[in-house]
Amino acid sequence: MLNHVMLIDEDDVTLMICELRLKKSQFCKNVISFFSANEALTYYKTQIQLPKNEQILPELIFLDINMPEKSGWDFLDEFELEILPYIKAPQITILSSTVDPKDSEKASYNPHLIGFIHKPLTSESLSKLNRFLS
Image (cartoon, rainbow, N blue to C red; front, side, top):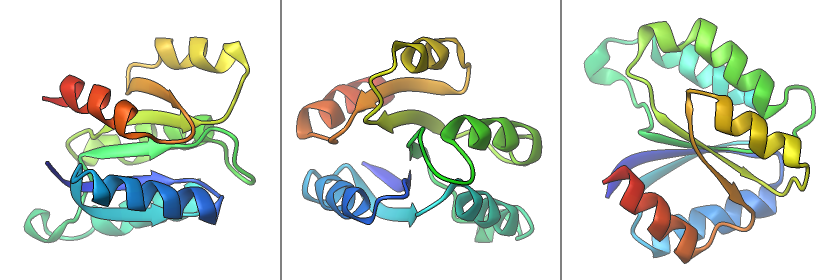
């Protein structure tokens, strides 16, 4: 069981369903949710200013691709440049409803991504992911 998992998605219903699924499946102890990539980046920027023993950093991030203001791809670019030099890299998986095959292809080439899950998040997808994380 993971300690902290982060969800980044602009849809509050998706966030609620994912949080319930993660808790019901006992996949993690805590869920940190954000409605935008900017909010998540701000959270990380705040955390890296704290002493290491006070930081609350997720081991896994579920990231939506298509969000207003800043896409999941934009988040990954900024995260790599501004956050990753200061922390142990979390596992990141895309959780998206996109049907564009270019997105899954792009994800397969990104060294920071471990997977691509199509919404909704299910017990089966968590089980597969958990086997990968173990």
